[in-house]
Amino acid sequence: MFDLIFPYYLWVKAAHIVSVVVWLGGQCLLVVQLASHRQVLAEQGNADLLSAVEQRCLRLVVNPAMLATLLLGATLFFLRGPELLGEGWFQVKLACVLAMMALHGAIAATVASLRRETVSAARIRVLQLAGLMLTATIVSIAVIK
Image 1 (cartoon, helix red, strand yellow):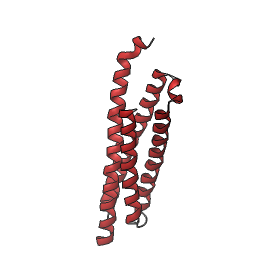
Image 2 (image 1 turned 45 degrees about the vertical axis):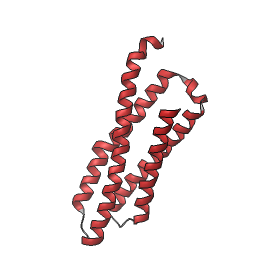
Image 3 (image 1 turned 90 degrees about the vertical axis):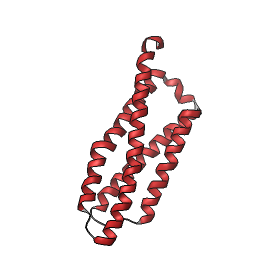
Image 4 (image 1 turned 135 degrees about the vertical axis):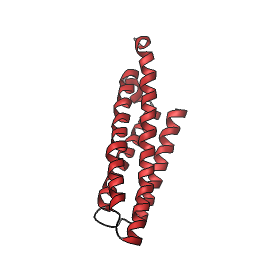
């Protein structure tokens, strides 16, 4: 059975990797943008253009990439079979993906709150560090497993 879907499996896997790169790269870029936005607000007090750019980046790039990553990852899971659930590396990777989704929500909330109020530099640093640590962990697990 796997022989019939193997060629498609590789295409789904490639698309999954592309969507992961876009999602995580977009999140990293968005957090850097948030730091710039915070600095402009502190210096000039008006950053409406930056808010619009952040909203557009989240809506048009990062959110769709996250959805594609999750859908393609679920497709890969179902193509491989439920035996993956018993493997330790997969459980850790799944936990990290759930944490990355929570981080995505925190970044989206920060984008929204920066339109209304000042966000602390510490919060932005935590978002950056969490994103980098989760990215490194997920990629390492996927490669080393």
